[in-house]
Figure 1 (cartoon, rainbow, N blue to C red):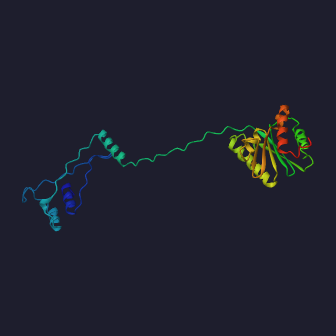
Figure 2 (cartoon, helix red, strand yellow):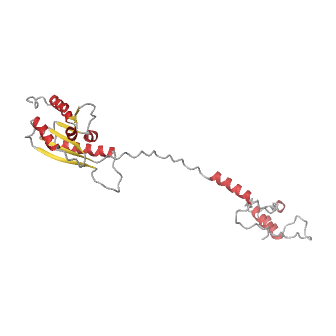
Length: 262
């Protein structure tokens, strides 16, 4: 079928012929079909082939209403093709959602290893003492003397120890302050729930920083009816004997009945 007949057929069927405005990259160049020469012996120059005229009359269309044959499209320059394709891509491309990056918290400073030595004296006292690993000082004897001065040396006693970090893993990140505080506070709360006492001594920096269930703005605080007392560690009392006087004055104030005879 030649180009003229194809156009007339499509027009009669109500189909609009599509001609590209430019050639796509790597597409073959379009070739114009060879149109038939008009028959000189016919009715005139506007007369169409018999087959096309018959089809047009069958569908009720006029032969004279044939569309003009589109001219051969001129292929645009490569730069023009790239510009048009780029503009179409930019118009149809959906905007990318803006992703807000969550702020990353700075890593906490790792907590140096320490040991918490604990003593229960009946239902009177739970003492938590801070100690550095490897120290070899007579802290047991000093605590025994303090318990004897208060008259608690004959009470049933129990000992325990908490070592930080709980597990030394060279391949894991060193635990920070929040982890140490959560672990030590949970341990203290569990220990008091298992065996209640009237007083808790937090002796030293680590015990006060990580185990305190309430804020220690003063030397003594109340925690649900239990007295929480901040004292120097036994190691500090041994290395700085002058601090024993202040500790004794505080104990006499807190336990007047136990220290009355002293």
